[in-house]
Length: 97
Image 1 (cartoon, rainbow, N blue to C red):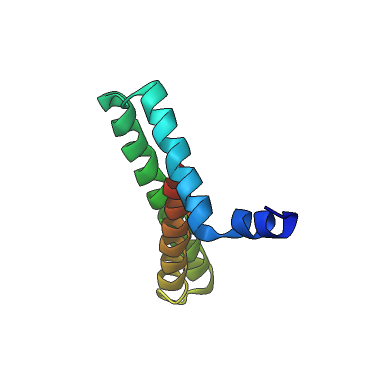
Image 2: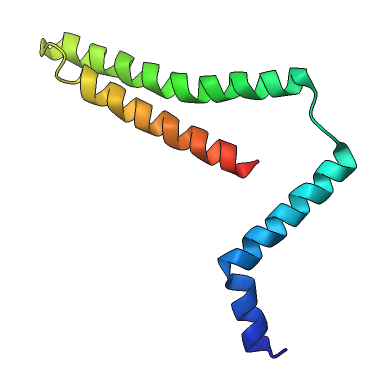
């Protein structure tokens, strides 16, 4: 196989995903299943990853609204931004495993 074809094969998403799955399976065969405690810990971390940015956005929005007496003008969009950020962070964390 020439270098050009080898580089193309390395960049192919199907080849990358196949290698990733093979590596995960090999790791699972070496280490076995996770304990119930570890799974619960991961679920807890995932919850905090999602909740903290949401509450931070809401808190910041309420502070700005209180300062400028603007009702919920900043609270709602900043909370939504926190939800989006938390969702994106949780997605990245889940897919990094």
